[in-house]
Figure 1 (cartoon, rainbow, N blue to C red):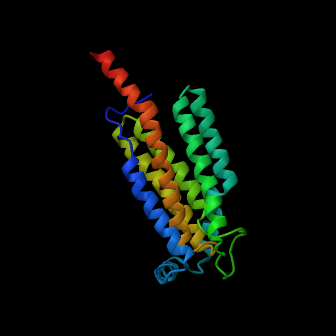
Figure 2: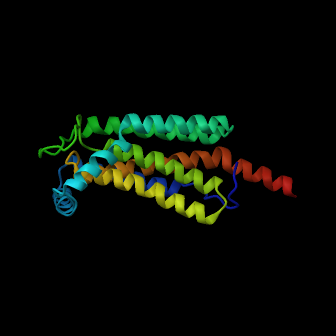
Figure 3: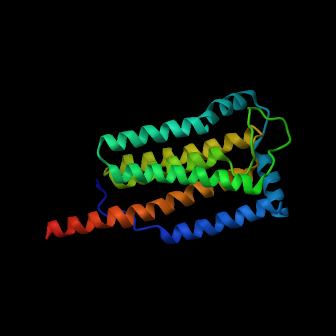
Length: 222
């Protein structure tokens, strides 16, 4: 199902660029560079406060990015796509989510960055970089954005849904900083990782499914 007349071409170049940026960012974090220290300090100074209402909101909203929640949401999306016989999109979803989260686990154990030493406002364990909440949400909502672009025809709904899906990982990342369980650079690293694997996944989807479908449609219209 490709309702968009001109779907985006393969994203190999953007994927390569994001991979290099992600690798560079990870190296800066792993080396505890002065730039990362300054970046974290500046963002924390802007984001964090002791407002009770903000703390309550952050504690609730951050749960949307929990690994268990993201996994359940991804499984539901996978099942829905299978039910509608959108097998290529289903495997695109599964592949991106599995690889993104597996790679995130590997990077966490390679960098082994401790979490912020200030008092955490929610429970969090394990290493700090990259933020698993940010990786998972960026990957899942990135997938949803790709599916919206490919499936939805109406420009109003397409634009609205893209905006909404973009806000979710941004807000989840914000809560991880606000709740003192991640440095801002952890969150940025998570976003970069999630986006990178969505772009890589779309390149495969375009090459093995979308492009052949477009060629087939073109032949039928002649």
